[in-house]
Amino acid sequence: MTSSIDDELWSAIADPSRRRVLDLLIHHGEATASSLAAKVPFSRQAVSKHLLVLEGVGLVRRRKQGREVRYRVIPDQLGAVTEIMDRLSNEWSQRLATIKRLAEEGRGDASNAGAVNDPNTGRAIAR
Image (tube, rainbow, N blue to C red):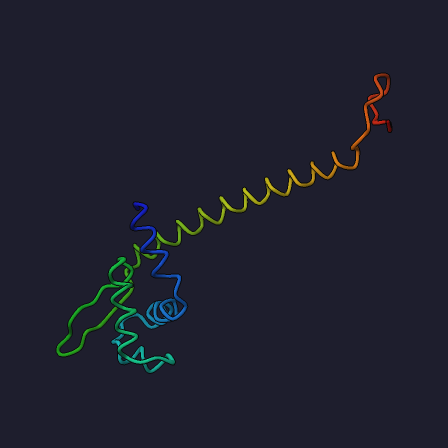
């Protein structure tokens, strides 16, 4: 994924209402905007707009069935998003562990501030 696509994707799933629509599609499979609107506290028009955004980033696909437009999640794209989120989670966990380690090392250094090591024993002694 390119940076522009990543930005659009994160923007699309950042909205809690949009995530709710996506969750409903995941759990119910295919659905119309009207059937989704019956399960959320916003209008069918708002649901339709959210579906267009999700379709624009490749998470949702539509198909016409008679007079209805039915939407469903694209599993491969959702899987790719999950992998990206897992990778980011791991990267942030590593960063936070590094910060914690550095802070703890700094705390150890601060407790010995003003101390020097005894050349015979290697222990810290106060100045």
